[in-house]
Length: 219
Image (cartoon, rainbow, N blue to C red):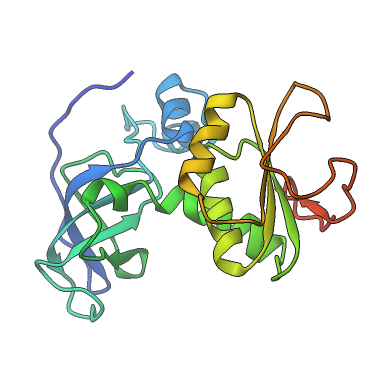
């Protein structure tokens, strides 16, 4: 469960920044922490017997309150978004400068806080592990979720085609509205048989050109 506590905020080191948090992201990992089933959080608590609680939160956005002497990419007053190894559910957080980026002027704090965990997960799977290349087709499961929709955005920007698998007709509509001008996107509804294809430009019986990003293996 969650409870609010007051805690001192340490000053940033030379390579760190102090952020006044304006928005946070909510991910499954944070829910698992609150349920006591996230292994990394349990290990951290076990390693420090005097520690009574664990602060969740992987991603955040806010305003730089103080930057360390060695910091050059951001300065006090900058709007930023970033990543924390948990601990972002605070009104102020200290992280390494390399873990934050300036928030684009057109982005809200909420948009910035929702990007990092899901976007980096999708990028890691598609590009760093999968080595996705222009002209290929990727098979994206749970494509209307956070990681799935981020993966589709990456596919489109890199010039890939994609087959998106979703669980309901409402999610088909969501993807059609989000990617209205992408002829390389095909949408399949899970659980309705191989003949059910929405907005498809390839035969369902053509799996050879698809790559599935469940593991680091290249299919």
